View 1 (cartoon, rainbow, N blue to C red):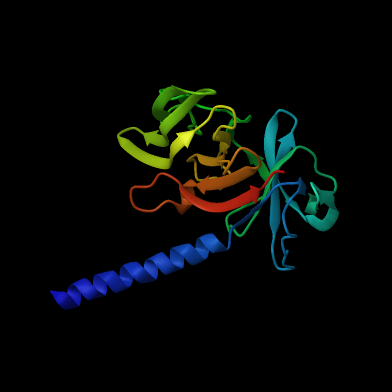
View 2: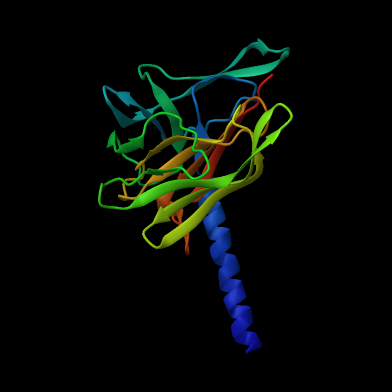
Length: 228
């Protein structure tokens, strides 16, 4: 019995290491000027940009440029830019199944969900994928505060808590920035902004193709931009 248990734990450990390593290869950037150190881009990396193309979103191969920018708030700044592509939402590399072309988008603009609110994020109308927010709103000095704020992804009878926060404020809210199918597996992927404080941004990308076990999506990459 001990031998079987040890073997199971060993296999689980190996699987976890492989999964974490695969996630570690995925990198996320956004174009703009930020208070960050310059990210190191490898010549072997193939970057894709999710960008506007008329009234839809497209995925295109790009070569991002990273350079030092004039200081912001007296601190070091970095500019991430692209040539020939406008309306870029995010840049991604490290996923083998990416390819150029249209990307189904179900949420195109940043959106805050109030506790008790849910929205459809299914790639197809019949899929039944929903994003729901739960929590409580309480009044404190200075305004309302959300407590036990949790974002859930639901698919029929399956439920997955994507992120949970003990406290959140509507003034600088955690929002879903985009939802669609960037990995083209007919299941929704999600980009959130989970600010770590009162300023700046903390973008987190969840992909359905990285999900394991009872997950519906799994976090694969983050991009943080502190503010002044």
